[in-house]
Image (cartoon, rainbow, N blue to C red):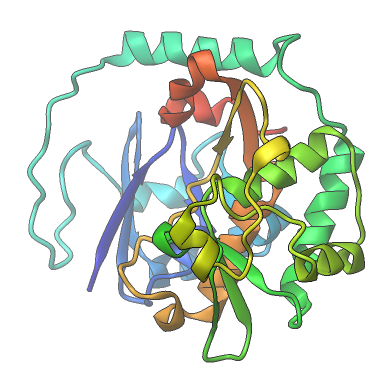
Length: 287
C-alpha cells in the first residue's frame, strides 16, 4: 500500500496522480477545510460521476466548487491521518498563514484578468486540445515526456512498440509558442516536422547532446522571450522507474498534461516564481 498526497484550494481530483495508483493505494487531498483521504477503490466507488466528466477524462482534473456531502466520510481533522493501516505522518507548522495565502490568491486573480496576460482564443485552445488527444491515439506518433532530462533529445522504444522522446520543458514551450501565434498545424504536418528534426526538444544543444540526441534541435528562436511557462496540473510521474518500466497509459496521461495548452499559462519572468505556488496556480485555471 502506497501513500500520496497533494494540496489544492478545494476538493480536486487529479487523474495524473490517481490513475497511476493501484486499487488499495491511498491518496490524500489537503485543502483549507481539511484533508480528504481515500483509496483509489474508494474514489471509483464513491465518485463514478467524476470519472465520466469531460474535465477529468480530457483535462485530467475535476474540482468541486462546493464539497459534496458524500465526500464528508473521507474528511478528517487537518494534519491528522485516518487509521487505515498507515503510520501517522509528522506534521509541520504552517509558516505562511491564511492571510498571506489570501493575498497570493488575489494576485493570482489580478494576473488572470490582467491586460498584460496573453489572451488565447478558445478556438485555438480547443484545436490544440483535439490535436493532443488525436496525437495520443495515433500509435505511429511518438510521445514526448519530461523525465530523465539527461537523456533529452534521445528516444526509446517502449515495450508496447511506441517511440518515446525525452525533452525538458522545451517541447511544451514550443507548443505554447504555436498557440500564442495562433498556429494550427495538422497532425500530419507535426509528424513531418518531427521526422525532419524541426521541433525543438533541447533548451540548449551541448556537445554530448549533439552526439547522442536523435532530436537535436534547440529551442533557439522558439523561446518565449520574457515569459516563463508554467503548468497548472503537475506533470511529474512521481516514480523512479525508467521510461520503459512505466505503463504506457501513464505515459499517455503525462503527455496530455505536458503538451496540452489548457494545462499551461505564462508569467513574466520577473514574477515567474509565483508559478510554483499552488494557491496562485489555482486561479489560472480556464473557466
